[in-house]
Length: 355
Image 1 (cartoon, rainbow, N blue to C red):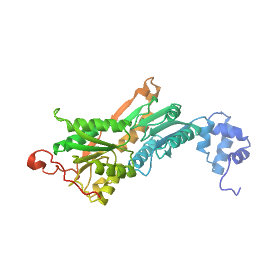
Image 2: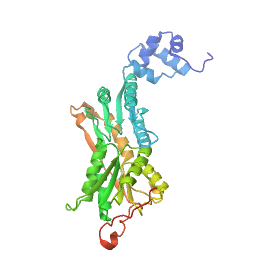
Image 3: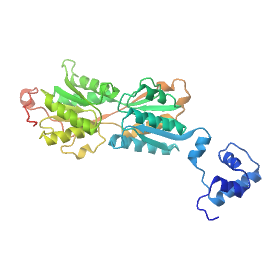
Image 4: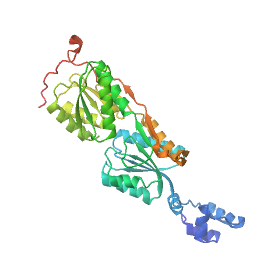
């Protein structure tokens, strides 16, 4: 034959059996006499036939794929996480189907329904928003689901979270140790678990002597560069005594720095800055940005490990909740507030022209 690619029908013709027999034999659902199986094996080898793994999984009513649903691959944090999950999946002999949702409800629903249509049984879900009831209902239909970094109300599934609270504590303690008492927090929505726990940790870190009362100004949007730009503008319009900023993500941080650069605001001379993620190349910025670093590689690997473990056979598997450790990487974006060394306390910042 002159074809470069052969179909199941070609193999069936060569082996002198029906296409249905070939299909069931290759799927492992039909036992045949040695003479027949030998003919099929020889035909497959001769024609270099490679079964379509996707079609095979569908015919068996299941898939060995892991569906990964996340907000945005342009975000370095999610890109690194996806790469980590793909590497881990390869170790377990699984493939990953990737769905980027732009953090939109309809796209999350479409991704979940696409995975369901493909008979995917294992799913890793990550969002930067509070999902709708419809999303929660779709998630509940999957056999195996791991939720990453944010909770989804109404879904009983293992949760794998970074230690957002400790990240806030580490940032707050570092700022307090250098004399900062008035801090702004830039984060995602107020209803996000990550926003709540990072803010809680920041409060604890700023008053770790159990005497001080933290002064925190809250600015919320979403985890995007454009949101960081908007939050920076809002902050500069409203800032009073704040001497430092704790940014809830590197994407927000990049947006903030763009606006500060435009308006001549200096880091750390005018405001100290700590970012959360350490996914961008923050060490290459000028100044290099102090950051709470998330264990992206470990997060992705552990998610796949949970999906592949025997824990799913236990009745309480959906109660699994693991907290992954974070660490503070000190760089050059945090210094004491103006006049702190002289007076022992923060002085009010001079008015800065933001026009």
